[in-house]
Length: 278
Image 1 (tube, rainbow, N blue to C red):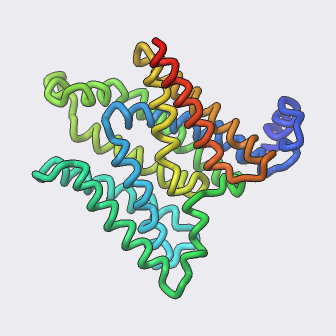
Image 2: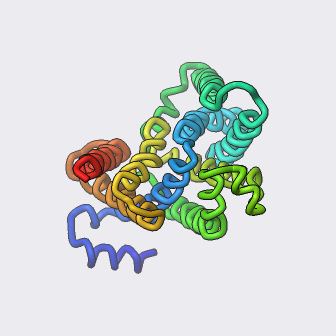
């Protein structure tokens, strides 16, 4: 890791590269931002923006469960609850007569209420308020390794299942006719979303994580002519937003997560203007 730090100092001879916490945050963004762009394209294609937002809010209950059972770091409880939460929504929305957005809203509201109730016992919610906006500057080397594992997992999923997921987003019946196991692919996808969202909450924040999943993909969709461009532009926009937001937040003394979202929003509106002129 020290060798990587030295290379960063050589490539980026700026004041921010003198600090270990900034180097860790920069490496984290290089790992996680492309994942947001990649997964975001699949979320937008499958019209799951509301689902991913609800999943992010459900992290409160995962944190609460981790606290109740005495975990020092509630990450395991968050991931486990996130997967169960996502699977439950996916299972029920396929068997219920209610609209999908109604089911997701019910699950999201219930989860938020339970999480807030448990975490606010004894007036202790302020201890967990940092999860709302995140703090990527607090990431350490062990957590970077966790991100690398998640990066490999998601890239492997994309290599083997992206075409099948794209076919499902176009037409379920068509996908089934091509021998695609629709439910299996959908369940694997929601597990991937749950893992990415939950492992990122601590550094990105519950309130804005869905923005980082949706904005780069939405911006890419505005100007892309094919799927390849759509994917590449989304990854580029997400990475540019992450790096720019980190550096701007350092020099302006403001929170990193919201700054990244602001940059991503600017990119989105620029692409929207380009789309309109076309």
